[in-house]
Length: 136
Image (cartoon, rainbow, N blue to C red):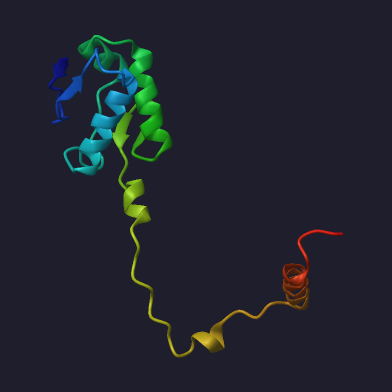
């Protein structure tokens, strides 16, 4: 098992070459866990993929795949010239439920009224909802 301590307080990445879990997935899992645990704070800059791959003794594509998955899921963001950083707003923060806003007494009065066309579309949709789902 390869263990690596990296700059910028990135926790130890443990890559187990005997594991059935692909190596890019091991990197992904370790970085995601560190981000969610707060060990990698928002805005933290990660090492370049080439440097990380060389330090781990892995192919650069392995690290690129892990970074790409984390970027696609919203944990990392990469910018040309500035490198890859942990996003300021994590996707898990966006999923947490927020308490509903209190409705003001004027809410009913200030609610938008649909145009005649909008009302017609709503009526048509409601009619479709009441009709059978198949035709004989």
